[in-house]
Each structure stands twice: as C-alpha cells, then as structure tokens.
Image (cartoon, rainbow, N blue to C red; front, side, top):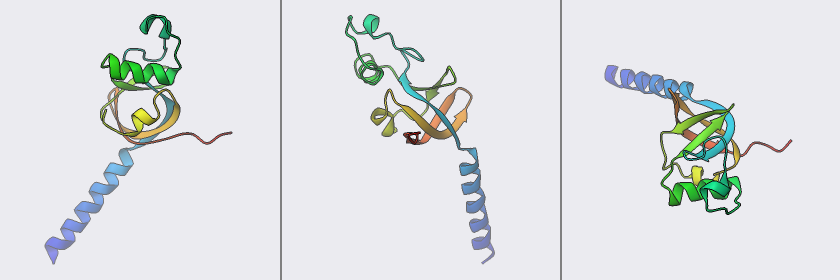
Length: 115
C-alpha cells in the first residue's frame, strides 16, 4: 500500500511539472528559410505566393523546417512532426508548448479568436 501511495504522488507531481512548463505565445508559423519575412519572388522563381503557400513550399521543396515567429524573434520547433504545423503554416496562431533555449516543443496550436 505504501508503494502505491508513493507512485500516485510521484505521478501527480510529474504531471504538474509538465503542465507548469507549458507557455502560450501569439505569432506566426513560418519556415527556416524565410524566418520572419517571406520574399517569395526571390525564393520561388518570381512566383508571387501567400505566406502560407511559401511556408509549405519551402518545407516540402527545399527541406526547410517549421519555425515560430513571435515578437520579431524566430524560434525553432522541436517536434517537426506535430500535425497542426502544416495545417496552420503561414497563419497567426496561439501556440502552446515548452521553451528550451530558442526551441519550442509544441503541445497545441489554435487560431486566435476574431476580434
């Protein structure tokens, strides 16, 4: 019985520390080639593209990585396989995750509420 109580307490403390580390920021999902500013004419043979199309093209065609841009700073994304990255490429979003240095491990991405 003593071991069960210790296991339950340890699990609860672990769960609290994981949720306590998550933070939420507002910014844009971009790509590592473009960072904070898309220059589609130079990058895609003169073809004018939306930020979304540019981000998707850079990731798929040029093997760029998804990044998160907030407050003019570019953060790498630690979990590139997070499904909502592609869904929200080029969008302004509320991103929740854990920051470690200049890298964020994403746990949730949502579109901000319309004002």
